[in-house]
Every structure is written in structure tokens, then in C-alpha cells.
Length: 275
Image 1 (spheres, rainbow, N blue to C red):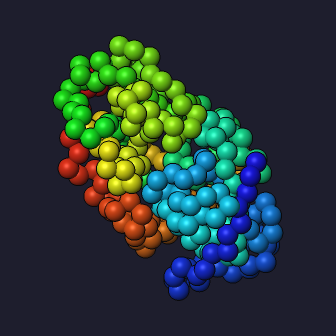
Image 2 (image 1 turned 180 degrees about the vertical axis):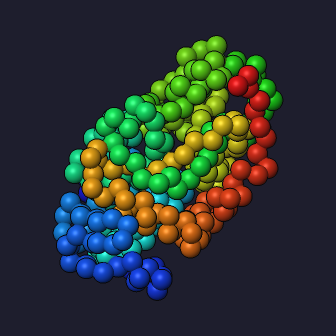
């Protein structure tokens, strides 16, 4: 597993109210205790970088993104001095292989199966699945979608959504690597890929060859994943709720996704299904 070490600055004076011990001892609050796996550091796992809008830069030198900004702010609120970023394929995270990290921020949706191998904090995004296509491609209805070649990430919730809700004529192409999945749509190997709407919007902002054709009506929560049995769930959830309440997450969304999360569902056509 590869690591990248980053020294975050102080993001906001308000965060000082959450910081305390520093230096690596357990951070105690009325909402739980946070004990880092390594003194003074928040070790955060994500999928290979970059992830447009969520993790920018490289694993050794992250430069920004919504989830990276959340990691920096979270470390500060928990009284930690550094963020250590590690990467691994998403499918390993979904199977509970966090490799000693304190938590994973990787656009991961809690499910019953994942709950058997991971613990989850309070969700920080609630997003509809969206259909990512080449610019100019229309998906007017489910029948049209069924005739298209889908690309989906392996071991993501989109596998079952595509197979059970869309029911395409051809099996979806499965990708371990997110950027190769996007590339398959660009080069025509696939007609459409499915991502959470905020992620799809960030991808489109990054590449004008792509567009969002539509979204599904059902929304999925996205949450921080922690090792099964972690004693840090309450402290992480408390900090995430505070980040949501004081507008930090929306501010980061506007900065890195180009829209507030509360506005991200607007103006995207709904693909009506039988559900």
C-alpha cells in the first residue's frame, strides 16, 4: 500500500474549538474518543487518484478535492497534526481491507454486505445515481438505456442498480479502475457509465467531451468507512455532523464540484423506471 504525507494548515478558526491534544494522544470529547492508528496523524484511505472533484493531485502530493478537504478539516477537528493519504482499489475498501487506515473516504455507500466488514460514520452526501455519456448522447427512457453498453465500477452498488433497475440487453463492462471506466465512455467502448451525481458533475466539469444524460429517482448515502469494531465511529460522526452544520461540506462542494450539494440534484432529467 502506498502513502502520501501532507501537512494541512488551519482551515478555520472555528475548528480550534474541536482541536485539543495534538501530538497523537486520544482526542476526547462529549461525543466520543478518537484514537489514531499512528500518533498525531489521521490516516485516510481512498481509491487511486485522481478522483475528479474529490481527490486531486497524486497520492504523494494531494492538492485538493472535496473528500481531501474533508480529511484535512476532520484531522484538525480531532486535534491531529497531519493527514497521511493512502490508496488502494475501491473493491478492496468495499471488502473491508483498510490496511491500518483510520478511515476511508472513497465515495462509499453503506450496504448490509459492507456493514459486515466495515463500520460507517454519519453520511455526508445523499446522491442519485447518474448516467454519464458522451456529449450529445440522449437517454430518453429506460428502453433506450437497455440498448446501451454500460460501464460500471467493480464491487460498487452500481452493479446491482444497472442489472436490477436498468436491466440492459448486454452485461455491463466491469472496471477496477475508475479512470479507465471513464475512458471507456470517451473512446466508445461503452455508451454510458453510472456514478453518483456529484461525482458525475465533477467528471463533466473536468472533461467537456462528457455529459450527464439523466439521473435515477433513488438516492444513495455516502459515508466514511471505518474498520469493523472501531471505537472512533462516534467521534468521526460527531465531527462530520459539525462540518455539515457549519457549512464546511457545502463550501468544499462549491469549491471543488462547482455546486452546493443541496443544489446538485437540480436541472438533471429524471430517468423514470418501473420502481
